[in-house]
Length: 141
Image 1 (cartoon, rainbow, N blue to C red):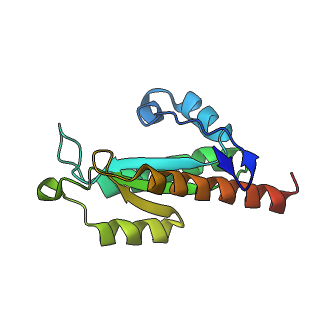
Image 2: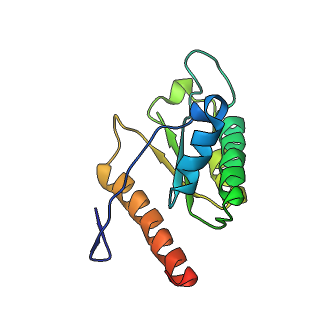
């Protein structure tokens, strides 16, 4: 990915299961990251109709604890709601999710892998990379 005429490597890792199973590894992943994007389904988990936003807030807290351990404050966090093309199964409203993201100080996007425009997702990730670049300028790196 090229952002502001600079090549950037974006690596995505699914680490949600590691919070409980591999606490130290989870913290290590967060400490070695420049940003975190939390992805949830607006329909909830298929095997358990749990409230996705509660899980997002809890995961955000886990990320914050891991980052704080390394005194990494202010790194960018994005929240992405997926499966927004399945309105009849939706249990999380877009406005509610947007407010949650704003409260947490996160960027927000609802996106459908089935119907979504890849340019929109690229733009969202590009904005997070720009946030990383700004943070590095502030820190003098």
